[in-house]
Length: 127
Image 1 (tube, rainbow, N blue to C red):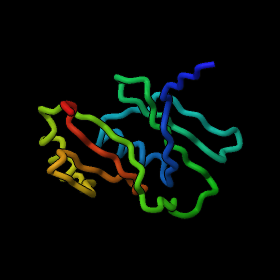
Image 2 (image 1 turned 60 degrees about the horizontal axis):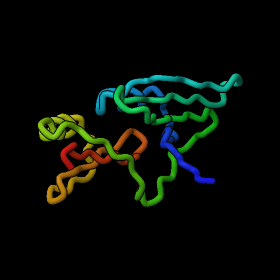
Image 3 (image 1 turned 180 degrees about the vertical axis):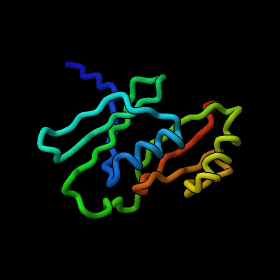
């Protein structure tokens, strides 16, 4: 048997679901495409899409979680491409938002941090 997995979504657990959704809408132009909520209100998930690919970012809020998530060394990240011709303009937009947390100009990339501290890599699409 040959197994062929296809990427579907990636999950980040978040403390404030609406604040996180607003960040992803503003910083990356993502939008909510689906919501799933427990009948007892113990959790809610919002799936965000880019309107281009079938890949989804799942943001999960847990009602009973009462502390920041431990991201360890935060060596994991999700990467987004942006149009190469708009890369500097988008970099400036993120700088004004105050969310750039790391930059590597030699590699032509930078990272932004979401409200929970998850790192998101931004690279021009010509790579």
